[in-house]
Image (spheres, rainbow, N blue to C red):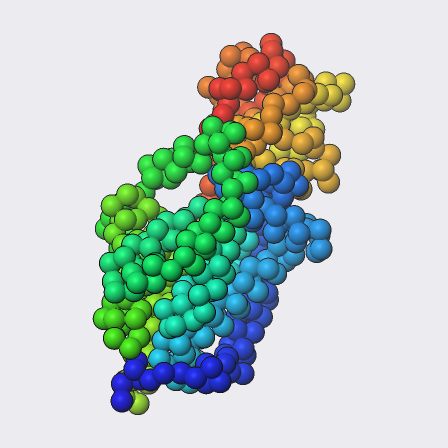
Length: 490
């Protein structure tokens, strides 16, 4: 009998010890890498946002900054402390993928394969290594998909409330999960499972999601819907449809595309006894929508666990030789994904393996702060009172805010994203500019002069390398006078 048609009893669907061991192994791997290199620019921003918690920010809801606040409170201000919860989140995703593989009709081999491939996918390792909104977006989408699988498999109608709660909390992390919810609704309407919508429970779930997400919606409304401007800015930076498709291969560590594609086919096939088609339809709709609207390639990443879980049943059905061949190819892909996604090599060699460019953004921050401090030291002591440090990006501002006090630097300001909302400086003394800010500062700084560029010991090409440093000793007006022109959301 086809494994896809075999009903799994509650006892059989219990998570087995080897799955927990696989999940623990990935968590241990991520934690062992957490102290290498340094903060990512986004992590710096999350920490400073967490210190100013609100129901929303220009570029994100409050969940990830709240996680940063919790992590800093419990473990201090370090990359290791920030990355504990992301690593644990990946462990949960691995376990849920294995659980879905079992409920989708797979046996023990499928369960294990789903755990290994989900945790080993390059993009999942990458988001598990850093504190980011994408990390918890993956977690919430996976939990929501796991609940949906239970619902489609005849689970309790009360599961709709759990699904609504998950989507609601997910909306407090990243609004993208709302698109997922719409796609799932469309998938239900487009398939015989539309009968589920005749019950009031799905709509109660929608209500729960709306109530949970409401505080962030109110914050956005009160601040002029800044995330709409952010969305337009991100769409303008799209890599194009060809790159969107091609990058899916890299995100799945190349060889895992095969079981993921097999999983999508199994979901779309919609076996009468296993009505999973709404999930396959939802993925297809999301893929096309992001493709044509300029979405980032990783936007569909949170549905990879269910694709790999469904594909695990295909893997289990292969011959022994086929499983050996696919397993070997998968191991190669996972190994390559680890090298690309994790800081395994020395910093001096990271450029040769950093396909995403994210690892190189985790080095050089102490050096940047030291170079800004060197400029600050050139200001005569009697003129330092009221000195303002203006940065071009939130990463630079975050680094100076977190690491600068040890170098005697004042708190920075920036026009980038939520830093602009946090307001202009009160000081009216000399201005140190970090970034290409000449045109911005020219109206109040006729004596603005370049005093250096940011470098790092490895000459590693990241966003900070070559950033100009500017100094204005005698501004003719305070920066607050031109604060509106400093703002940039992107």
